[in-house]
Image (tube, rainbow, N blue to C red; front, side):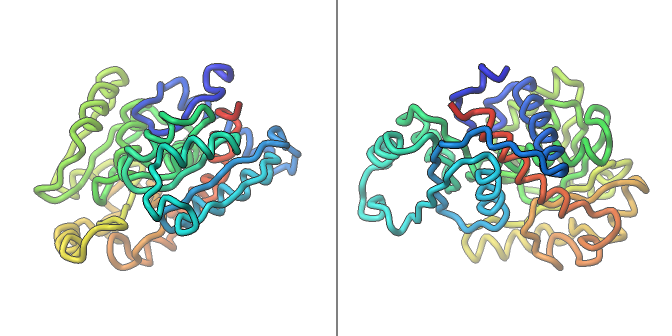
Length: 312
């Protein structure tokens, strides 16, 4: 498996097998053990990677910086406003020149076609730090967190409340892959990406997971082991879209009362940043069932595992 992932791009869960996702998750958990015991792991000393962030970031940027440092990677941060792309240089030209300088590219951007184009023109690995379609570094951190808190994946139920966007799509794929039942609570008129929905159902058929879209929040919460809150809108959406989505998702806010409708030992997850008072209340974020900061820490271990798995 190590050889299979070596030199491979890491772009989306929809492109990855269950075995690959399992391998990277296990590697991340092992890196967390090494981190906890302060065991050195500079396995990639001498490598130099580029990091291109076209969207603001707290967790992804800092998790990457620390993960790279622990692995011995020198990370070169590229500001988009300082690159010639801003005056119209084609992405394929930028990608090919970065490919000559660096051992890999970590990119956080807008359209998923951007990371796919970078991967098409670069021989070195490209890692997706977030696009509109998927957030696959978050996905590994989420799988880790569920394993740590619940001891298993298959047979659990997750209630997801939030907009159907990148984190939702990654969550759909991993739940379907590992046999986690997923009830997505969302208002009428919110529909998933058709290709992601089709791949989710294909994997669910193989794993036995039950994946549902429902407007009934109580039904989604019933017997849930995990309640996953998510933003009602995304970076880059218009003010009119945001106003509409806020109103549509208001009945799906995760409150303490809503959380009480799940199992008594349910955990609350959120990829952060959260809009406290919108998709989730402050009380839920701070309650004993909330695992958001363990989940946030796991982003660092997840990114470290991804770097180590794909580095050539």
